[in-house]
Length: 206
Image (cartoon, rainbow, N blue to C red; front, side, top):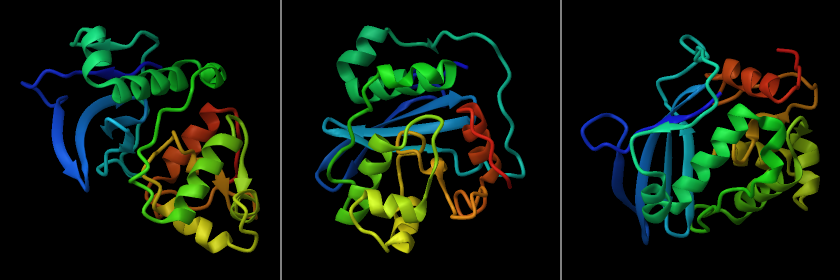
């Protein structure tokens, strides 16, 4: 399933310029199989990748369609030139949704180091992104061990709750020790988590 995005300032898919600490941010709204998403980045890396807050279990619906090409209204060369981090993330997400089995062929998009104001959270995010791949899941307890902090399962839960990089840092792959789905986005987007895992070939009990 492709992503479509539009950088035309005259409509809702637009590049927005904001500020975060010492970083000048660019934001791009995209449409995806799981609905509207927004990508925020500076020149040093991503600041966030997130699904619209308006999407929850009461209205989540997978967009239908078979076209695998990325559609946009801006010259790809201009996107790559002016917004390279966002361009890389769009390419990564597009491959994730269209051919997930090929996602390991692309490098993870760069994450801005200023985002992880909590060092533990940052370490957990990187560990999860680098060591828990497509089709795999991990418990909070085991992720704590992998991040070098055995016994810090509750703190890992906090890191997941504060993860700003949806899908790129795959907190949907983190499950309770029971192996069940658990709560995603404080239980508001469990259908999204179930869809992402199913998309990756993983079946989990709700």
